[in-house]
Length: 205
Image (cartoon, rainbow, N blue to C red; front, side):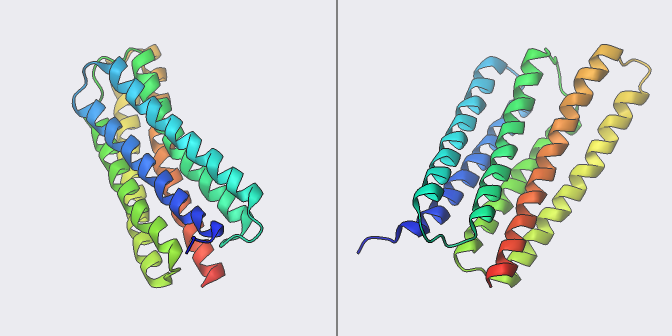
């Protein structure tokens, strides 16, 4: 028996968040072994393109499916918010290469690790959309919020050290501050995804 076309959204969401998780892993590996950057940035860019293709498929399905398992606006917003995560990861990796960052601050690695943990939790969270289990969603969402708070704290320390160091070159500070901001935005998008899923489950449970 063929699967009803409307359920393909769950498959695509799971594929999309797996792509985000892959991107966070590649970024973490890039920061942890900061060599051959051009090759590693290209690998992250390839994953970002995979994510774009999945978003395109979701939008095509949305336009061709009469009855959807979730509200159309929620499907649209969730797909684009997850896509923003991988877009920003790609953007950070690209900037680090183009701005010729010679050696990242150790807290960048910590931030990358938080993003890996966030995306792993988001895989669990997106899977709950099939069952709309509010209790499970609330638990996972709480864990993602804790990770986002950890990211906030790490970000503030990075920026503080950067701006208060007497050895910091002003031009370098501008470049690094932009990179740190984008990294923190990635964690914010993870929490945004979490909030969206919580809202979807509340509406549909």
